[in-house]
Image (cartoon, rainbow, N blue to C red; front, side):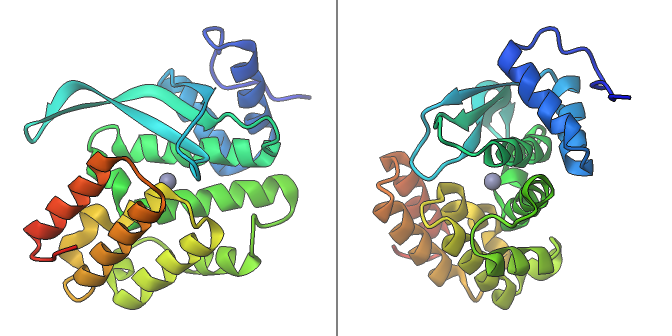
Length: 227
Ligand SMILES: [Zn+2]
């Protein structure tokens, strides 16, 4: 007997409903958690053209204030508008962003740390593997990411290097991957210079928006690093 979705999804478009149904039918714990989270929070998702190398993203808007900075997570996730995108990539990408939404809906910086990225990648890879029987990209990358559980030990320089190397191998153009340790900086006293230089080089190469490059330069300055 088919198991139906946990909550009514009548406010969703036909396409959104189909995606949610596919995720639910995947019968995988993270995929089902994502369906429950998305529907419970009435998060919408749609296809959009994104920054190159970005498979999916969540949005921020500016209705609340946090430490003097106005922000709010929107109830919308954007998925890369590429018709050739494999279904498993789209579904696992949606789960990845849902993890970030859950991490950041109260406190955005939590979603932009290396541990947060690692958590989202591991879940995404597991959903993808469940759907296709294969790991996305180089299996060595999956092996590295899945062998490193998120936690305080990710602040060890050896693990920092391993995670960043795996992310860069899998997706050299991954913008969030380039920025991932942004809010972890206090915990990397020995690696700060290297992180900021690496970040600045990546943003330059990706031709990232100027405000992001300026932000990294200013943040580096706060920590006594010139990039
Ligand atoms: Zn991410």
